[in-house]
Amino acid sequence: DGGITQSPKYLFRKEGQNVTLSCEQNLNHDAMYWYRQDPGQGLRLIYYSQIVNDFQKGDIAEGYSVSREKKESFPLTVTSAQKNPTAFYLCASSIRGEVQFFGPGTRLTVL
Amino acid sequence: GENVEQHPSTLSVQEGDSAVIKCTYSDSASNYFPWYKQELGKRPQLIIDIRSNVGEKKDQRIAVTLNKTAKHFSLHITETQPEDSAVYFCAASRGISGQNFVFGPGTRLSVLP
Image (cartoon, rainbow over all chains, first blue to last red; front, top):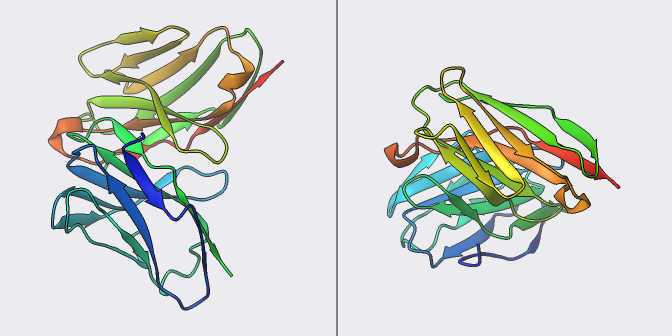
């Protein structure tokens, strides 16, 4: 777990703003994932990437965008098109699609 | 696609008792089944996992059983302690085949002293 970092820990967004959440890993994992977690709920997949320069939409990709220019980095942008973005965002990485290691999370609040 | 169901959604046990959480999955090609524990406000952490070529795995007070025919797997926690209180998530994956994880909705376990 210590090999995955997310920043910032807390993020406040005004309506109409785009914000970018950072996720970096030094585990040399090929696959990276973004999940959204609402209070008392499970993990919903936003986007995932299995190799550099390639990514796929998950179950709730609308209003989000990602890039994977480097193996170590998988930033998530929450766009103004996401109407209810207040949530806890978790980044994860895995090797060969098995054990997933999670970052500490970013708590996003819309003001 | 894969669908994972998890029961119960909440579970309360007395300290020292056992707790059992059950998951079912739909995709017969899934071959990797991890369990994660998430404490309040923290990240999920892997506590145990099992692959399809094994029927049971134990790690101290925690065990997982897998029935591939019935497509279900269960988490067993014995001699529960207050620090076991958390939300537990199961997941299913095709593993090395490259398919992404599908998580169950979670079980909130409360261990009462």
